[in-house]
Image (cartoon, rainbow, N blue to C red):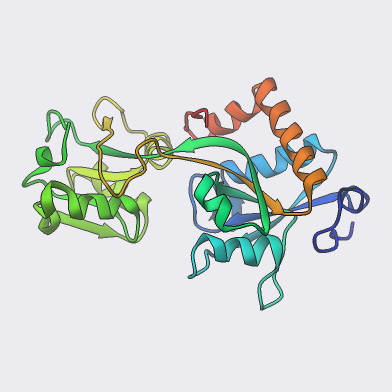
Length: 266
């Protein structure tokens, strides 16, 4: 079947038979290309939402914009990329944050489905307990390049940890370094940590986590949801209803569990 016209209303989307869903590239465990197959929690959620609405999912994977998430919303939701890619009908993995919503009036941000946050995972054989950044003194630590977790480690304990912080291209590489003994602790999101435990077959008893307070980390984490173009309220309502049905049936929790991740109520 043909793809829906850009910003099609609900009726045109139903006639097309497909829902165009924008997903980040390289965001495991939510969306990632593994051996030529696009997979992850958001991929499964896109399929489940579309099926619940009587549609098929047409995925539009995209690279994050250099201008930040507002650029992603412009390219993938309300305008389209200047190279002709997009826009989609809906984008997943959007922060549901009041200040961010006010800054992006061209879109509706709604339907939070998970709460994400940073955790410090550490090797219990090397560090008995961590309750503050100072407890990591002298230990090699790691984080993903450009992440808030990296900033937290670099600035933690008044910068005393900086010389021992190793920066990795991806969170998964930092976690593998923890599991192999290259580093003693890593600052990643809880979803990245839980997913890595499952895929790498590691024990939470050996590699526990703790939450550390930092001025550069949101104190309660952040909710993630969806975005559609501002005038697509009927589509937003249909997606919200579909998400609620998935939540009530237990399917949403099963999708997260498939990737080893515990869903956190937003």
